[in-house]
Amino acid sequence: MSNPQQEESTWPAFFADQSKRCQDPALRMFYAAGVPAPQSPIRDVPLVALDFETTGMDVHRHAIVSIGLVPFDLTRIRPSAGRYWVVRPQRPLDEASIRFHRITHAEVAHAPDLDEILDELLAELAGCLVVVHFRGIERPFLDAAVQARRGERCLFPLIDTMSIEAREVRQGGWNRLKGMLLGARTSIRLSDTRTRYGLPTYSAHHAKIDALATAELLQAQIARHYSPDTPVSELWE
Image (tube, rainbow, N blue to C red; front, side, top):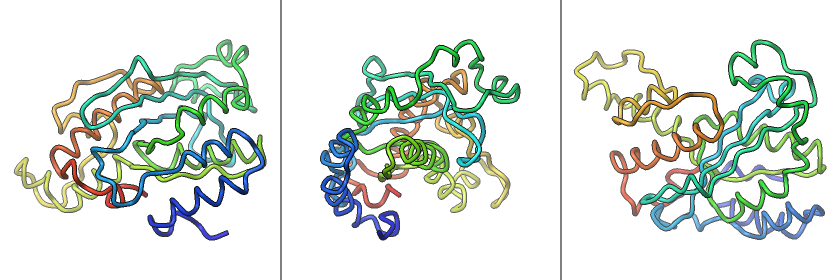
């Protein structure tokens, strides 16, 4: 199968094809919900901010320990409609990851395996365009977890607020605005990026709070750098 990430125009076709091929009912329904047409204005698209806390950065060695999501659009964020799960990784937690995300051995000992909440998660994501801060976590970790449990792929387009910010930093906009030297090192971590937009400081490394923070950040980035009429194909990856 060709990789649907190679061209944004292949995402709708990929979803249509997967909705027929998938054997797992929850995945089949996820794909059947489809994705926005590439030329859809971002203002018309239902969005969901997604964040995972994991035991590390290597999808082959590490695992998801918590999941947070918050639905939103360009005018409204709905944290009360969001979801949060702690899930049990297949390998024991180490002390470094506990210090990072503050999820303990006791919490994961009684938590469900991701497979037990996967149908709910896919239903929450279905029909929405996923928004993350750093594309190297949520999509690859979810795809690997679904392959391990259901034997099928879970791929989807997403908007990466870190990629958007990296583009702005490379182009020098923030450096000129702040009167700094062009090319000076600028952090694109979630908290540092939010500060540049005048957004409040939140406690980091809680999956639902980070999802909320990512939703607010995308709203600010669109308002400053784009237009509500921007086609999603200019933003998704």
